[in-house]
Figure: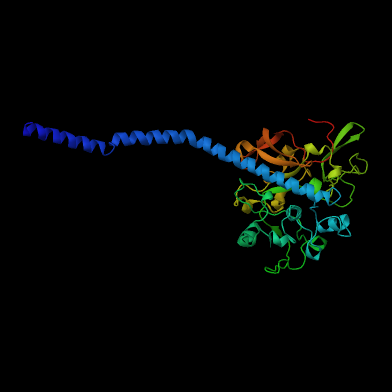
Length: 369
């Protein structure tokens, strides 16, 4: 072969080698575009799958809470742990034999009582949480908070720190914190102090709470008057001539046997703020975030509670506003909002009705809207 032809072939081979050794800029851009397109298609699906997995795990944890509640109730006359003020507790359990207590007869908060029933070795409230007045104060002590009871934690909760509210110090005869608490972190009780720990759920105060025998309802209920069924809104001051006066409707002190249609009534709910920053803007009374109640609500349902107490339940923890509920018969279920009320001051529309329907009040509903 002529020398010139050999040189031409060598140059062609070298050029081919250079071309096969990498991608052109256009080829790289095409590959990147394809990858970006695939990611844009797949990421929402992956995100939905992740969120669905968290929702399912959250419901599983709540069902674990229900199993602990069953165990506790079996040992306590079919009652769950009471969550109430100290003065009411002394009236409800004068001999301290009906509910669970720690050192110095300090009432165990309901997460601690259920943890005991589940076999977690908590003996006192400080084995679970820390004493604090505010979220910020509790956050500073976070390293002292136990991580041994996941049944009261939702994986979708970004905060994972809250208070069951009771026992707490409210002054005078309602100081529920005893002595200085944790020997390794002694804390003298002060006004508005309670225990804070890892907690994503709240309990029904209508069921677990108690109140003095005033004759006025503290739960929503209906009674028959001269004009038919009348709504008795909890906490209202009725004259003796009113059919609601003396009609009962008080909280059940943990007595599950007194719940009407327990498969429809929520016992444990997802509660708490959406973010830690929300604690800074909450009014002081909304430290009740982990207590769900029908007091002051216009109706007996979870949607009525949402409209009345807009800060107590998260609405963006799960997709489409879904939330998990443990019912008073201890079955757990995911419910979804199907109607919304008017926007509140924060321009946030809150659910006014869920499916399936969830009652907060443990009393019968005779005229279902």
